[in-house]
Image 1 (tube, one colour):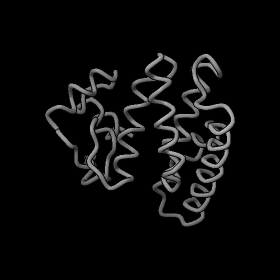
Image 2 (image 1 turned 120 degrees about the horizontal axis):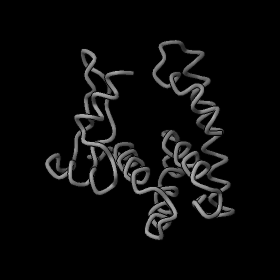
Image 3 (image 1 turned 180 degrees about the vertical axis):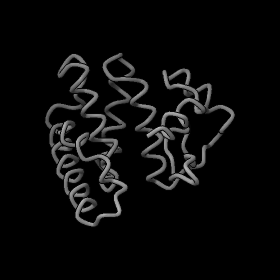
Image 4 (image 1 turned 60 degrees about the horizontal axis):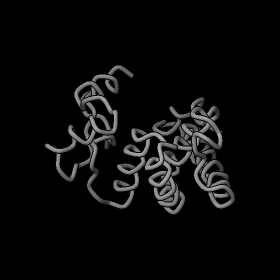
Length: 154
């Protein structure tokens, strides 16, 4: 699922309606399947599926934007797994921000962008922008300036 997601992730912001529809269909199918997996097994932890597959599960949850129930459940299960070093703190921070933004709230870590303006990423509002850098460092996320540079390069 993660491989297919990676292959077409650029469709998420496409101006081509067929590409957008393909993205929506793929992320919905992946979100449905992740929901089934979480129901049956819980969060796909490092011990259960390995680091690469656990990262893939996070990616699926991250992109399940139209399935907030799946994202919320993934966040809850990932929090427990991360507390036992069985999930990535970095990935958890990204998912936490994604859920907050999808709930219409301010993000904590400054990982989610609202879009680009003149080639520069524009962040969704943060709860405490001054504290965001400290939280990013604690979660193993590069400083926001480096993150913005990386986004601008793509």
